[in-house]
Image (cartoon, rainbow, N blue to C red; front, side, top):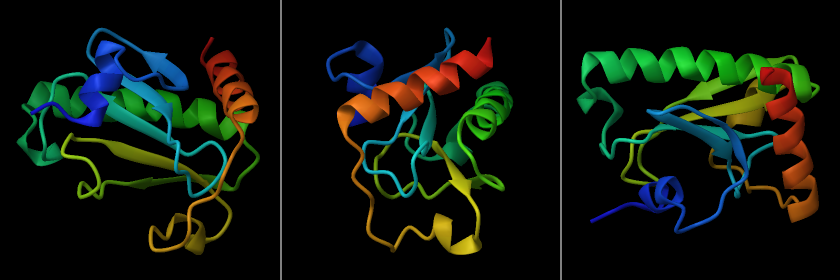
Length: 131
């Protein structure tokens, strides 16, 4: 059964795309903890991140690093928090969250609402930092 992330990869579901390669995709989380909260996924559908083959696992982290540096430039924050939870969607993914304090990456907190125009603007700002 394909996950919501696989449907995003195939274009069935739209996303606020930040970056893409042949193997990986980064897009804004539509239920963010903070503005700029980005998800990074392998396009290959694998549930558990530790079940990825070594090449994909390493590539995902290298791609995440590039995206994190762009998010950090585009979104005012002290640093980018990184989390792998893996319970929300059965598709391996990494959360990149702009943080100023440890509590900013607490997934038990309520998510924020960001209007679609601002989401598009945030995604564009991050993309601009990748160039």
